[in-house]
Image 1 (spheres, rainbow, N blue to C red):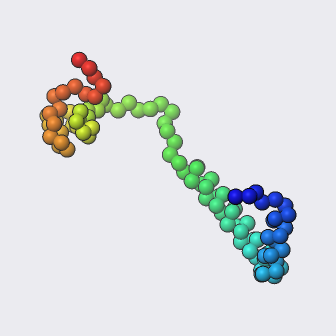
Image 2: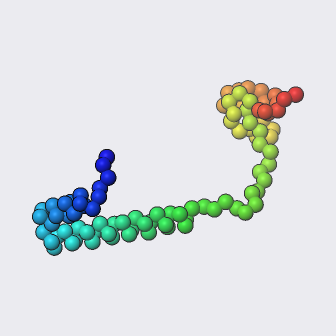
Image 3: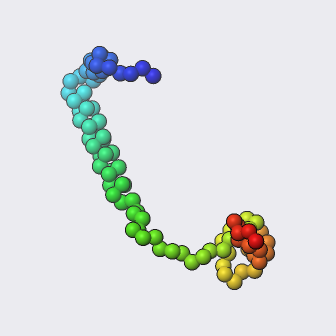
Length: 96
């Protein structure tokens, strides 16, 4: 797509003036400016509302996962509820 330079923008502005007239073109420009301003304001609010990570991460208890399907397991589970595999085997990444 070609870049829009000053001559192209002037031609576009003249066409808008011819189609809508000076009063309506001013209203369209004002509406466009308000829309851009609201968009910037909303994007700043979203960035301010984003959850922040804590300064020091809280350590979670050691989790157990099924070696077959990877679903989470409770400490007392002997078999995976998803795939039925025995949980007595070593955790993924543990060799022995």
